[in-house]
Length: 204
Image 1 (cartoon, one colour):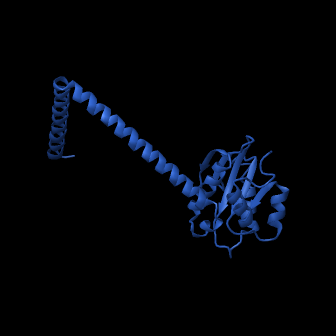
Image 2 (cartoon, one colour):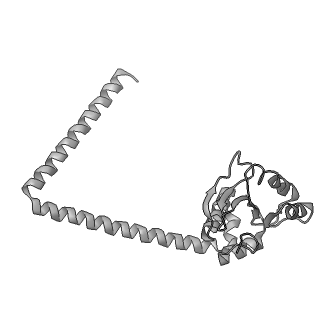
Image 3 (cartoon, helix red, strand yellow):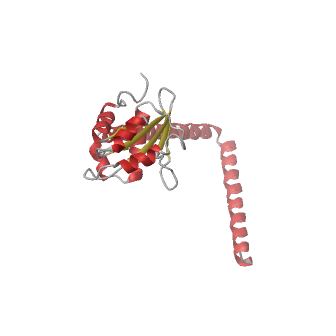
């Protein structure tokens, strides 16, 4: 940094300090001269702040309700990107009582897009496959997930979810043998609509 820029930054800092001192002095002087008005203005500021806070809180609550209504429709996933689909399923988990829900998909995720704690206390590892309905998830994806969900991530409940479907074949048999839950479009649609995970995922 040049001397000129350092000097300019120093002057700006000095001016800011002077401005703060002047404003504080004016406020103190006003309070001393007009104590009743000071109380009134302070009360007014508090009331306005509370009103604004209530408005923002209600607005956010309304947005959450609207988002939850949209999330109930499986069709919304068809226009999503992969990361958006992961966020969508994470919201489904939260709405179903899962805790510590974390979206962790991305480079180097080793197959774990979403992680959570189930209502019964078990560790959940999820891989999300967002794709067009015409493209089905094959056995290779299932086998790759099977190789990481427990050994790498320590999953006790391992789910592979897709807004599409799974191809028939040895991948489904492998999933059954290794106790990996496969959730296709129909299963996700029911879960999103009812807010309850399919039977067998968590203990009743």
